[in-house]
Amino acid sequence: MKKLIRVFIAVFCLFFALLSAPDSFLRQMHDYISTIPRIVSEATLRLAESIDDLTGNNDSDSGKDKNDGQTQNSDPSADAGTPGSSGNAASPPDGGAGTGSGEGNESGEERKDIAEQIQAGEEASQPEIYYYYTQLSREERLLYDAMYILANSFAIDESVSESRLLDTDPASDAFAESYTRAYNALIRDHPEFFWIAQEKAKYECKYYLLPSFGGKYKIVLSLLDTTGQPITNEDGTCIYMEQQARMEQKASALLDQVDYQQSDAGIALQLHDLLIDNAWYNTGAGTYDYAHTAYGALVEDSQGNAGGALCDGYALAYEYLLQRAGITCIVVSGYAGPSEGDTEKHAWNLVELDDEWYEVDPTWDDLDFTLSPSEDGYDLFLEATTNEEYMSRIRHYMFNLTTEQMRSFTPGDEFTYTSNNGWVTLLQSSVHIRSTAEESEVTRDYVTPLAPVAEGTWYTWDMLTGQE
Image 1 (cartoon, rainbow, N blue to C red):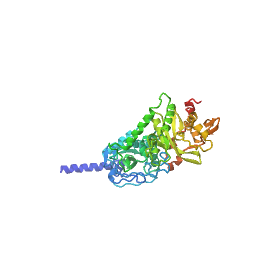
Image 2: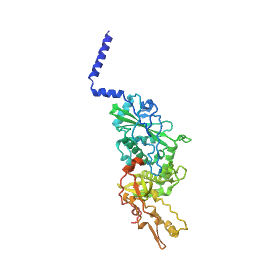
Image 3: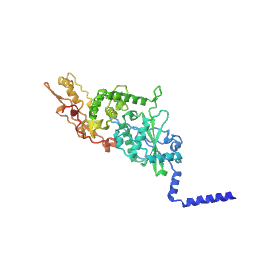
Image 4: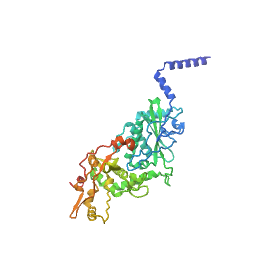
């Protein structure tokens, strides 16, 4: 009887406590109990195949969810000459989202992880040399950091995941843009991830709605192989890691030839020359060829041609070499050609020297002139192209210019070769036009508009070589 009385008193106290609890507490408890995870189901953010994926029942360890899902596909640009222009592997849906169904609450350990993430911010520091990272919003940096970690810990036998907490609804257009910008920034900042840029692996993104944490969204990213082919060597090492090592070794070999007693500008000039001596313009490369990467320009293209590269390969290789030398360099993309009405997609560089920016196009500086002996002016042409001093100037006509000069270039008298036999100029007027923010939805390039205007005029080729 006494036991029944105690139970009755306990139940009555509990009932009274619930009746007197604040409404905010009751709403929070209801939200916590009824949390329904959601996951994007369009284009690159695919619907999970089981509720276990959503509720974290197959978590590998603290804070890292293993997800078995499909990888996303994206439509590559017809011209792969511009890195990032295809929205490679990371483009979220163009608005709209699907919702998963099922019940699932955060476990105690998961709630602890989430609380720690909120407190710590989960923002891994990146060196200032990675320019585009510094231009991102805090949430974009969180996505970038997660992608960066996954790229560096790419696993063959399992899908490791990274989770982050964000305020932005993953079903919104704002998230789609931020997600793509974070991916663009990662690929532009880190030429060593060339295999991701060429879609050998793709990021998969899922998310949870967490009402009990103020309506935040838990974003879960995975990096998954897309080739369907063995990606390990006979010794069990990852092919991409081995390729990265080869690129690092080649870069080290070129960097070993540099005179580091010179200024940063002098080092940048040396690396410019070493790169264009190592690479050659491979017009026959396809969309997914390594010719579009730093690996192609420094090591080999997908066909095994040493140094075979296209414009983005040159630009990313130059960036990588300068990064290794401690000099900030970025890649921008847009259009270039003889005039505004006659352009093609193109990529080139900006370099920061003494807090000022300069534009450089190593692709266009790697000139290759041909003229048939039967054509008029061949003797004068041969004389000009075998003149070392003249050709040295020609091979640097796109080196350390301002944005205005690059935007509308007209060769001056210094680019004309004159001798007793007459004169000849091997250059023509040209334009380099960067992609704009208004074009981003089409180009899928959300980082070029973040690039600074180059206004540096001191470290010209003439100044560095004592020609003035």
